[in-house]
Image (cartoon, rainbow, N blue to C red):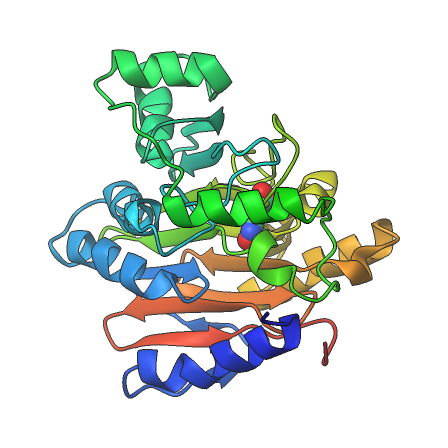
Length: 330
Ligand code: SD4
């Protein structure tokens, strides 16, 4: 079985291959400064960015770009933390959380949604077709079906077998990530931010949430201000990791407010991690990563534990970057 340490080692080992010819960078310095640009969390951000980029280079809107981008991992059964093929909850059900927000402050969200492969597109419809921000559970499903989405089984045979094994081993759910082997089960939400040719910034966030969570649990990812926040006059931020910590500190909103007060994207992300460290006693047992983009197209990140990375694509570069962490070693 893969340990947390070996997972980090392995993922670091493959980075140069999937980074094409680009170097993997480390550091809390904000980078970039041009647009269009798209950034997103984790390795699966690379193909997601590519899909978003195809929209951006044609002059499409950042809203269309982030939706198209995060639909890639949502549809990919190999990405076991987002959409179709996601790790189920403790009852063996795949329940999804997603939200989307644009530079005008419009926002849409779905939580605890079952059977729909692309929750991000339902979240966008909530934003565009209803007077509400968030729909949940059966109501969100009803809304999706009424709007032409197809009901699908999202539990792949691979994840069903993993859940059965989990049940048999009578393991209890833990949000702690310093337990060996837990990392793969708790992380890898995709959060994406993009600026289009006209300088409009949008964001999207979508996840199957923590693996083996209690049935009904909703994380930070669909909560505007927690998993995602965009302010068209300032910038945007997304979060990944232990959602409970992000919700308690309204992390993405905090990052954007820090940027409003003059911090660079990376400094703002660092401040949000520091807030968690100050307010949440057992933060050492968790991973949280923040990713931010300002209106100039500068981006940055910061996380609690080493191991969080993000993907960037703009006119001059396409790469994965290791985020700087509060703790320097695992
Ligand atoms: C959650 N924040 O449901 C999500 C999980 C996650 O990277 O980000 N994983 O708490």
